[in-house]
Length: 264
Image 1 (cartoon, rainbow, N blue to C red):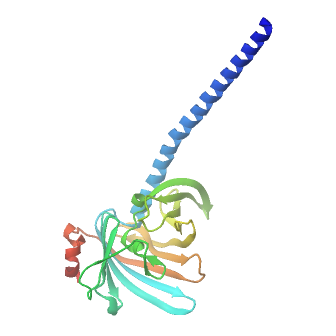
Image 2 (image 1 turned 90 degrees about the horizontal axis):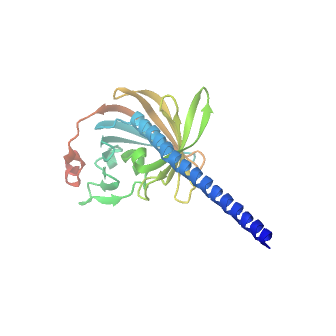
Image 3 (image 1 turned 180 degrees about the horizontal axis):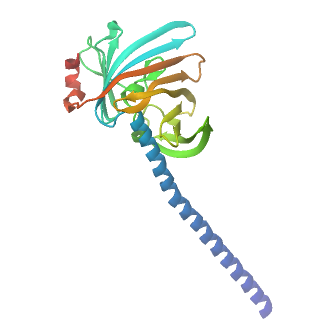
């Protein structure tokens, strides 16, 4: 009787110790995982921040953009814009062509957006995701701050030609940003962006974008052409050409609804 009890007690003791060992092992793995994840996120964020600075100056600047939108069943549509931006949080987008729309201005402060039209007395609230022209959303011109609008993580790497690229997944910080999810390829060595895929809230691929024609603008080599293609309708795309970029000391008063009329 005593022997059987000892056997039972010994068995229970071994089971208990085994359970404690497994628990400690799982806690150790979890702790290691939690320690690794923030580091990975920090690396991913630094990659996205670097790519942001490649695309645009971090401080005040001005740039002219020509957008040609192409569709298989229609003539090409061309529009021109002048963008004034300061610190990724304040932007003014002015239509310069066509002449019939000259005077229309988009104002962005943070993630709030308004459009001013000469024939309307008050600015109208709009969204970053709303279509501006062709495959281009308002946010594509007014706010291109990936590092501020998304939580990034590295999901892989890819060899393309002679270069290696980080593949990052960017998840929107909230629903107010232009796209809810972005998959982003960034050159591991130079930090230059290569391409991006933009997804909807339902995780549907909406657009593909490539960053091309790298040239010196505002003292740094940057992509001067973006090609945005509709992922759902073949042959529909918009080509954005950037020129005349220069750094400017822009006063805060420019980025107010009260000042919009004076910009004309």
